[in-house]
Image (tube, rainbow, N blue to C red; front, side, top):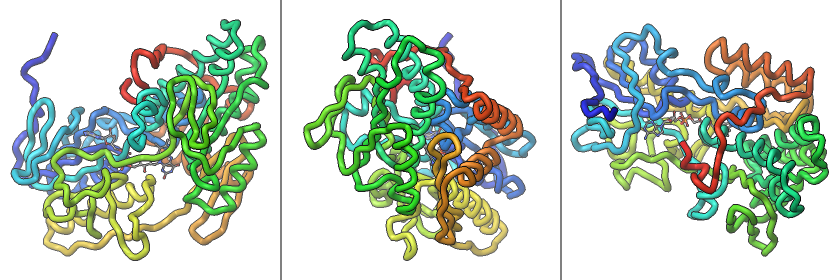
Length: 438
Ligand SMILES: Cc1cc2nc3c(=O)[nH]c(=O)nc-3n(C[C@H](O)[C@H](O)[C@H](O)COP(=O)(O)OP(=O)(O)OC[C@H]3O[C@@H](n4cnc5c(N)ncnc54)[C@H](O)[C@@H]3O)c2cc1C
């Protein structure tokens, strides 16, 4: 039955209304920080859950179930007063009338905070956009998981060598943390998991290629981390191709800028992100697909609109190109803006955002990770891997998710197994592009 009488149904209030678009890292911290402020808070998100993106690759490679890395937003805000969550996509804002527009109606705001995060950047390469697998949402991870498992089920069946190669080859584009982590997890599957499931396949035939446009892996981390990651991946026989750009992909062949080609049914795109810009933000306040903000995360040229997290660019002396698009920046901006809005409503002054860098890390399979500390210290190996695990475990939403993830990881560690190798929903890339199958 088509419902024709839908509307946002937000009650009028005497308190100023803060509308937050996006329940990601930034939006979540902001809304939590406003719990005791004298405001009505309305959070709008196209999903009813928060996604812990740093572990999407584990869902894609059968290490974790999707529910472990996502948390229902309504549960987070259980017991909050004058808080309203609505699952709806915001299409547009009208800053002149202070209104947001959604498919089921408009809503006025006193303060609007855009925390819509980012999406994959295909740099205008349309064929790649339609055929490759990005990793930005839970649904993307599930598409990729199905694809990987379906490939091996098909590889058992085909008599044709070139078909088998295309099914068993994986190409990962982008040598940042996501690309490195996906390639490492594929290496784990190849070494420890899939050979038991498919004894009739020769896993020497499974190739993992990691392609990076610059001269080293983990370009935003130390050169120590980049070199270590390379060494770890080479232990899985990953073919690391540096200084090469991917120019095209037809679903079967990947075309590199030097004319080389690689056969694969699965191209994983981890080569870049861009802001999830909503229509109606004044063009003068944007750069690329992101929103220019000042030290209070206020959108340039508009007084009552803010942007936080991946979508926002705040340039200062220390970060002339803006801050890195990572969870800590989003979390800290959300918290700072909550304090500033509460202070503002109490007649107090604003404090500028200052980023406290807590370091960065990436993992490349069992017992292998790299950590860069803000002190300039770097290390790798087992200790780095333990730190990576505990930092991610404690950052997950909710006790249940932490427990389930911990048990999954412990089980995998002891048994060399990954428990989530189910093709629940078959994925057919010829019918739907992976990026659109949401
Ligand atoms: C695979 C992967 C691995 C990563 N690993 C790390 C890591 O190890 N460490 C790290 O610090 N960072 C990592 N990041 C980056 C980190 O996840 C982001 O920096 C962070 O999620 C940004 O937070 P955000 O709140 O700005 O956006 P998000 O967390 O992306 O949240 C945006 C929210 O907005 C909603 N939304 C978007 N558009 C609309 C709309 N029009 N209407 C309604 N809702 C909308 C989305 O549904 C989403 O819930 C990783 C990212 C990816 C993709």
